[in-house]
Length: 220
Image 1: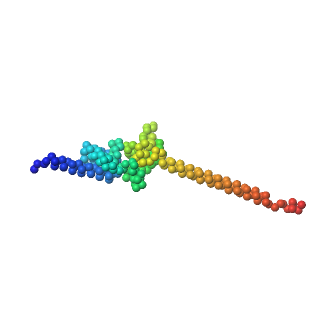
Image 2: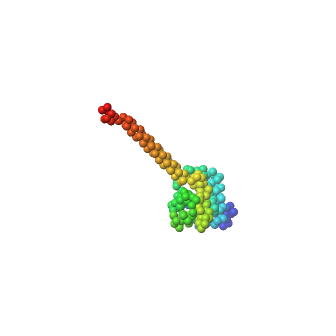
Image 3: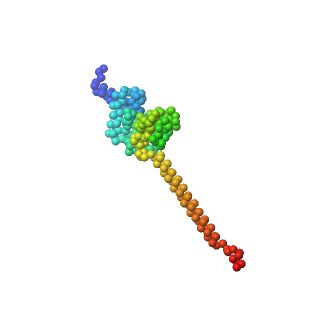
């Protein structure tokens, strides 16, 4: 039985659709950046086909004006929502699927204490932090600057875009605000104490002035 060119084309198209849906499902379920080896392992497809399918997905989401997009960063890919909808997602999820709890804690220390020596991070978090720092660097979340026998770590500009936060350090800002509030409260308490002390002095003076004259003056 001969197979017509139309039938072959239909078979190829069906196979492409299946592969596309497979890749889409992998991106959807993973919820994190995936390397090419990851995608090959999860889809059983060769890298040439995977790249073609990624382009098709990107085109599909762009053409349909979807809120979803495929983000590429340093040879890694991830399905994500478009930046304009990030604020909505932040209300519904914590983003913990991307990083383990240990990784989140390490990144939080770097974000709060930056710039900070990698050797200090290792002392605080243990040797597992080497892998954390490597992952953060590969994702473009932190910058590493050689400093003696170690590296100085600080946040990369992409960190703020990645987590949809402003360019300032929100942790330090909140701490500074709390410190200012504490200082204001302290000043208010000192002021109230001083006022209370003044009232006591005035009261003592008033009572002193109203004391009855001594007996010797009364006898005169």
